[in-house]
Length: 261
Ligand SMILES: O=C1O[C@H](COP(=O)(O)O)[C@@H](O)[C@H](O)[C@H]1O
Image (tube, rainbow, N blue to C red; front, side):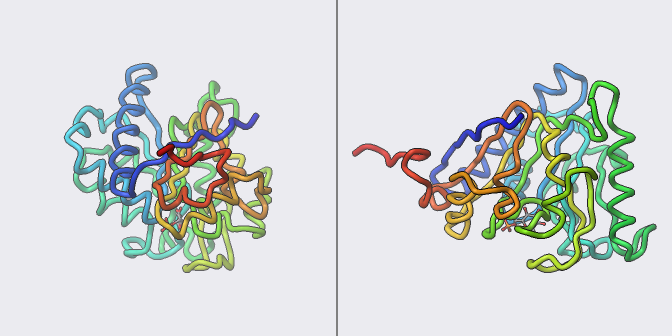
């Protein structure tokens, strides 16, 4: 069942990143207190990396028990290990190299020079197996119930590497698929599918900047998920859109009424 999107609009992208980082710290600490460990799905892109950098700079990051945190990725650019364009490389630079994560719990998606070579479909299948192995009986499916799954919203409404109208966004069975011919470079990618995304307790969509305004307005105005993948991303208990004022500037008034004078 889909959860209706809730919106939080911050003044600008810096404040949005700081507030989202504070929110994420609280979620992780709460999950660790109630379930022993936490699992978070990271996103690539400018807004996702901005959040990770804000988290790295937040003194409260030390409230997290980094050894009891599983990190997964929503998508990856299928490039060689260490390539600066890989989402995991950027996450390491923004945060992971400066906190004591357990390397065994950092579940990066395969690289194009990894065990599956350049076979992106085999790489996707391997990541699906890794997710399935981490899912317990309480998860009722082939992926863990992630505590928080974050998605940067692209200017074309893509989330993860689910681009409008491409086969990956139509996938209803597999949890991870290879993407061929993505309109944003690089063309070859690995992505979670909508069914995997919807296994998360909370899905957070991040959109900051003027170039995200139209995408946010389309996705939040009843568009279909094939044409606007962000519209199909929701969590089991909560779907949260975290925006800045620029990204919220084209939202219908019914969703984001202008402040009264
Ligand atoms: O390529 C990607 O882009 C999106 C959005 O990136 P942004 O820079 O426009 O914020 C991101 O969500 C995705 O993870 C990434 O691979």
